[in-house]
Image (cartoon, rainbow, N blue to C red):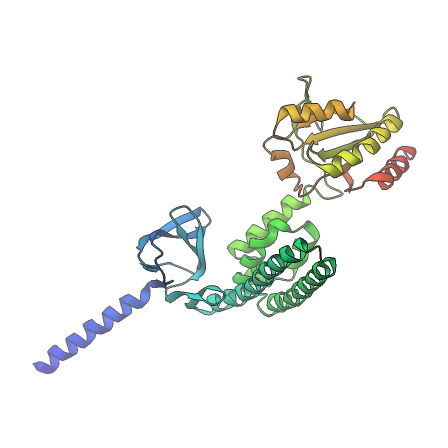
Length: 361
């Protein structure tokens, strides 16, 4: 009888262990006196979904739960500030404060891969902070040689870490983690660089959630690349007239993104005015898109620069975002069918290209 009871107890214990291993457990030991509410969310096709919430007391906290598959998860503060990113599986994780920042211990193979990518990012962040600190001191002393040496040193760090990251991309090209890393940084990329990274991924990574996210971003990039028909937009001029890109008829169109507060834009404006006067009657039209947020400053600049072409203000930055404008001045040259011909020409190069295109029409 005792043997039967012992056997039953053993089975119960095994079941308890089995149930415990079916879910995940995340413990945090960040030390100090950090306290406050924390939330654990995962990024799914539906967006951010909350899995659990807890209270951190003196740097200690714990999350428990279960996921159906490996998912990217974030620990956030009540103010939505990120604490750490996890490749969450039904495993145990320990989040600790390390020498170079918050570290994630435990987890599975995906977490180990992410940790390698994070180590590279931490190196760059650490060297950047060091350069900025020493740079401020060198600037105060007007030590130009020191400033140049610091920049050269940081460039070497970027070159070396870039090689390390490229090696990880190659080693883990089939991993969804690599797709996640690329997707996380694609906001600062352009079409050619993102397309090249995506093409280097394996099929498993391409078919993952973040592989599909990259595909969507590439498609959005493609919409404003040479050869594509530029997306239409509209706005209101200073005089109150509504104009649209596709509604304006011309042999050649130039979209000019600028702002009143942009020094290089204002320096380039006399050249743009000269080009407009010279080629407008031949079929050139310019559509100015100002990234100003204050209408009075926009209006003042229009008058000062004597812009005779249609100009609208992209106050909410919606047009700029759709065209991935990351710096101004930014120009886009279109043909009469609104097909993008070339981007980011300025000065003599812009005038030369316009002359060539109009002479051929």
